[in-house]
Image (cartoon, rainbow, N blue to C red; front, side, top):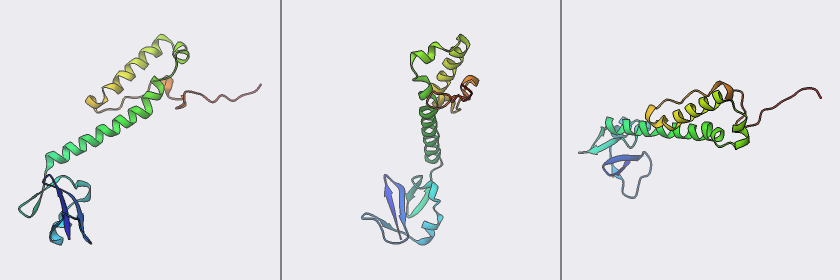
Length: 135
């Protein structure tokens, strides 16, 4: 059984086979590793030492990455609509939209996704609404 170590951190393990620069370790060491925390264990003196600070950094990066992806998917398609769409908004809607946009821009600091303004709740992602009815 082997582990892969990069810059002092365990970045992979193999119960079968190995790595070109792998380090032979016991099955107990492999069993002590939590798969979702790989990359956060330092390899010191033949032991896996969990680095809580590194783990929190990884968690923070994942949270921020997820928020950025949500911002791109939920906010930018609305904000990047054309002038004709904006011209149809009331002053109150424009104000709400501006505050919502700023909250999305600040999301990496606040770490809280803003709630979509009420007037956008029924809005389709592509900016079109589906109207049905009689002729």
